[in-house]
Length: 252
Image (cartoon, helix red, strand yellow):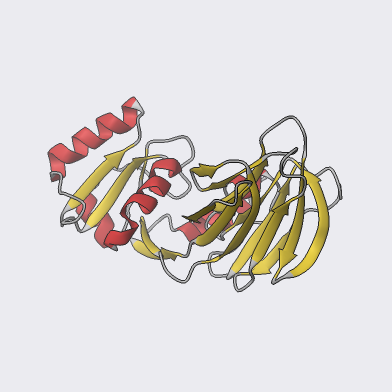
């Protein structure tokens, strides 16, 4: 079994990467059987974007702060751990954004697509689902659309719902909603197409971020589940992502 190791920039992750390379050797990503990101969820998400086209499985090892999508570091033989691991396919979101100069940006997101205000002023959004206006005006700091895998990340911090991995749902969640103040978001079928328009986009500037890729001065965004770009992530047999999602729902 051949590995390609990649780490975040922290000293702990870099040191761990060097130790893994000493033990298992380093292989070019094109020739590797497995991509091994070392660090937190950020380096895993970056690896998913960087190496998606290679159609390789990913086994993340946590040397970050939370690492929800990562596996705990272990003294066990890495090859044995991977052979006994569970596989989970992640279906990303496809995002198409248009800025105030009508320039088009395309990206994918395995966790979430989030729109955020760029200034001291609150943002104003109109939300359409399948070309039908469902909210004429949402005043807030931002709004995000999350996959089930990403529902325990930024979405949960914004008080969005945790989604089971096999739910085939998306979470649409406001960030610090001012009007309507009591709106807590919506759960939508992944078959839906979500269109978010920035009201007064020239005066109330907004950025959009797909995982860790940001575009600024946006005036409209379309979000839907992607039919390709799926990635396969492996989890230690004793710590599947399904178990992690369940544990999050019963923490108090």
